[in-house]
Length: 254
Image (tube, rainbow, N blue to C red; front, side):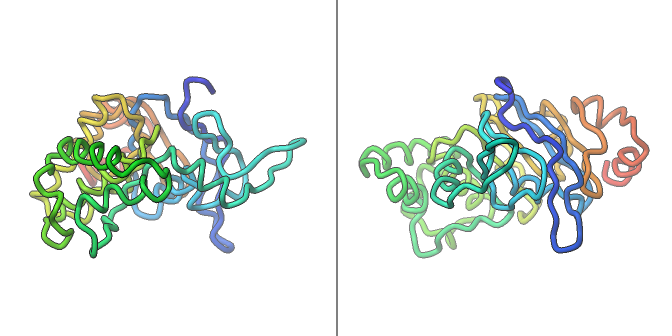
């Protein structure tokens, strides 16, 4: 498991009597980008949320950077960690949602520095300098005094990415980060994500942007009905899918 940032072993998740994840086996190498694709309701977002323990798995094992997510194991049995322990381990994982979830009453800069100041308790001056660097990195260094409602959707999503990066995560999770954007704003967010990939950030991305998947991802995973149907390098899976279900899906979206 030394080379895997994420390792899922027969992960299952139920919602009431409905089984959402039906035994997911998947590895994400450190420094790689994995894209999860598939129809709505296939379990992609649920699996992403399990990685961050925003959803609890009902069976199987899920590891991030070699550590069991949300549980400790003793004598072959799992025991759920206390919320404080889970919250601490969650700090190493950044997550960007479909909706930007910025604090509307705070400036852009305040949104970025809030979590590091409150959680990491580092000096405000140090964090503010780092936040300004992050805003420059996402192309919005000049908008630190603006409020979220003064920005476009694409700009708000770039701020959300900067906010997640401010916690210095080892892993970034993206849940359809461009789905709520107007088409002309999608590119500016994907450009930031490309830069992150080139810098070596490990990323798991739920996306419908298959062009991005082909250009940036190291591994594409097609999910349907709670299982991994097929996975592989993007040129192989997207250009020469082997499974008929993958072929049928791609024929409708490409």
